[in-house]
Length: 613
Image (cartoon, rainbow, N blue to C red; front, side, top):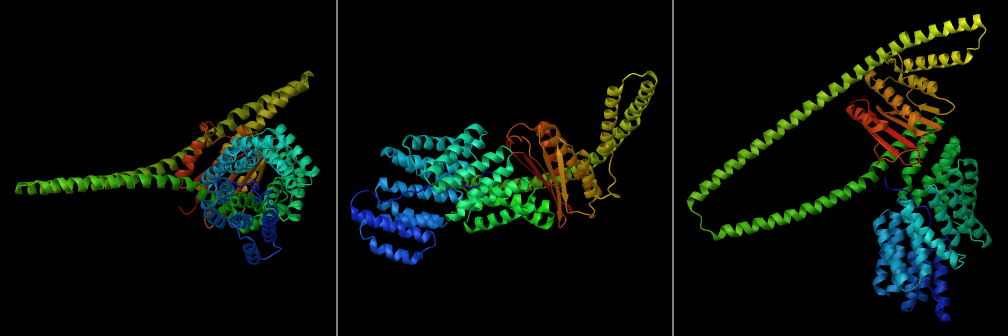
């Protein structure tokens, strides 16, 4: 999924120039009036009336139009930004149009239309570079870094941010320098360049404090929080987010208030402080909706689901996880809809070409004088066509029937495979218990007698045999089929997770099933899925924590297994960790499985199963 959150604020420009004192004074007054409206200190309608009276020349009208667009952007009215900015562009020079392109690009980025956003911002950058205005070009590079950060293309984000940082550093800028350095720092951290991220974030914070730049301090403290959380110093990260939050509230920066709440939601969840996580998450949800920032909703609902589950409020946990899943499906479907649209365009083109060809054919036929026998030929051709159509539909009906029979047969085979697998597990478990384990027990007893009679130190050998004996008993127990007609699924999974938890990998289990019964065959499959997924975590993930959640609502099961390990690239060949195998088994039972993972970001596997099917 490509939707994420727009991390930082886009930088916009003031539009007054340093000539003609009366013009400068009027343009400054227009800008300050709109700033008062943005901060809620004045009514926007009265401000618009006042500014219209001042803006009597074309240049001042441009100032008025631009700062009106800025007001719309700062108050999250992005559709109005696009409307008014596009109205202004034809009436100004190319140089003046660049600032509107930047505004339109920023607005489209907030709407999640990143291709248009990048196109508009690059227009602005090209104009500024063409006119030798490298300062404003650097600010546009910062905005492009934001867009690529939203797309999780951290390499491109870092390149643009670092290019802007280098130029602002050369000219000793004190306005944007600390903010741009912070964005470069967070991008570097996402690329695991921890040392570079630490250097840039500290440099940004020092600069922001030195020049008393509150926005710079807000972003720098946030960047420090990201750095500390990446280094597993989560408590210290919370302190940085709190500092950023205090300044954000003090200076009315609601966008950053929302971002810090999201960061605290993740941090508190990691610390298992679920009450605090829920408070931050619900506040982030309110702010995200009030700012029309749909890009953050998936992350907030998903993390709130874990927090509510950790607190034991499983109904709210299920509601948030369901909403997160809906958003995931919606965002994932955007690319599919674009592909469908492309196909529709091609189809319409071919349709027009076919219509033109048919028209030419009719024209050709109208010029010919056909004899009566041609009508009989046409009638015969029609009969053949009707026969062909009938044969086509009969064949398609036959194919559909064969496919249905094949599907039924596949379900039977899948069920037989489950039963066969359970019988084979029972046989292997019995062999381990009655054969290998019994032999190890006999050898253990003999060595104990030998040790007591001969006064020799066999402790190391005894310890190894005893460990092997315990491993065989554990493997045998895990392989032994579970009678789900007598035991419920929640208690069985809880016992399994507890038995396989260790100092190296702590397995956390939560569920709202209680004593509810699940049909025995599906319960066995869910149990085996959990075994296989936990086994994958133990073998591949190098994780410290594994979270297993089993939620049930209205005969629907949601199973999730998440770890904080090294993760993997979904585009790589991952057959070795059983993804294809478990995906086929889930689909054979009519379920849906979703994998979410990235390098060093852990892995989340979610399985959705309807118990009534």
